[in-house]
Image 1 (cartoon, rainbow, N blue to C red):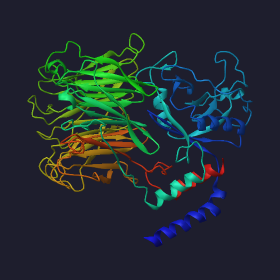
Image 2: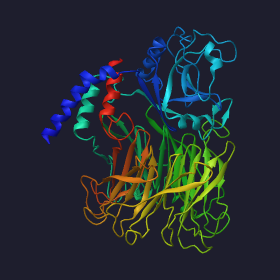
Image 3: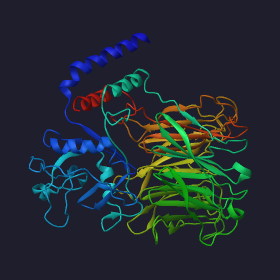
Image 4: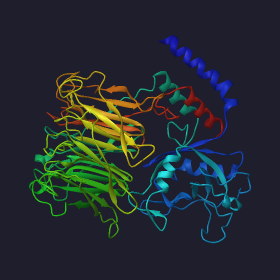
Length: 624
């Protein structure tokens, strides 16, 4: 082992002093958004003043939390001025123009915004605003300075460009939020690329970049709280539900990441909390908003609550109720939030038939500022008795996926084969785009028990699938057909490499950033129902195949922990796994584990630390 490390160190220094100085080309910046990452190469040789200005804003964190406030299809998308509440940030002084630098406003290039927009622009007015060209806009060359280009991923840019807008401002399912703008190579996120970043790289490379999950528990945890029954993570925030807290009234806990640790920031409860509400049975977080389901509220009529964070303080912003809801609807058993859109399932609601189920879409600022109003009531075109549509829900951008575990695609009798439905926002309304079923679906599989989408893929769990043993479980990945995007096709069936009967693999699923996490909370590796979770990613040679790349087990696993009962993936390539049976604060007090799916030193997006990452790191190091 020491010989291997010595050889690695020698290789590093050879690259550091001999190879990289000849390789260094241009600095690279990554914009991490809720619609995906955009990686930009900067042309500092052609536009040195503009690039230095842009990097100054990046290093200061100026762009973090801003939105793309101007989106015009077949033209451009623009950011650099406003946050999600349309508060404008004060930029630095304008910079001299470098418009006549030989670079052109072609598709994928990035250029400085100028003022005014509607008259002849002032070439010397560039500050913090910039735009990305969606098409060739070479007529702008006479005024606007091009200083970079997108090298990954124009699919994200195109997705943003086609959002519905009012006066060029993206509407729900927006906004598009820049969570973090950082120089690629700033591994320790201190706003600079220096030897400290190399130290992090070397440590993670020598250790193969493995990530150790960080465990979180409630500060006031007690027996039977079931913390971890529901989990969600987004950028530097995580939310964990404890539906049995305080005589089943329920609670949810917000954790924030800072300086390598996750610490509890808030304990959330409903303003009208009552015993038996089960507040925290479902949770989801997006930027500074969180949604929490309380399906037991009012004799299981159910409700859901929106919380907002301002300056580190989380406060209840709205209580959501089903339209004409009645007891036993179970509204709030499933929830999801993305930007200014939220979805809530009511799987026993009698919409078109008894217990066929329904799901509701809510928009922020519907009717008035910060008013979460209902915009859509979703029911499948083939609704039937006991479909249980809405048992699981997930929303991301303009896509929503909804599970219907009671559905039988081959008959009208509910035998729990299960199905799931894809809905897409077409610019004015949400329409059913596809119905998903398993290629090998069978009765009692309960396909649709868990669902997740990142806008590019959908994953559906069927935890009672029997291929690898009775109730061993499976999960299925779908994506839009390349020729006809309105058709979704099954790309892969996932099973655990060590699958066994009664593992319940697929009881929880999550997908994002080209990776999937699947929970198997009854896996018995460390005692009966200690639980586990599995990470999958597309095969490099054949992306249609997904390979298991890791199995996750809690470092302190014990029987009855139910690790993997809930899983989620968030912006920043983080994952969270719930273990509601953990006993740290009392019997079944519960806990959750948060980890990075990819090491910090993975700079090229392949989820491993290699010489390619070293090249990226040292390119930006030598250029700053």
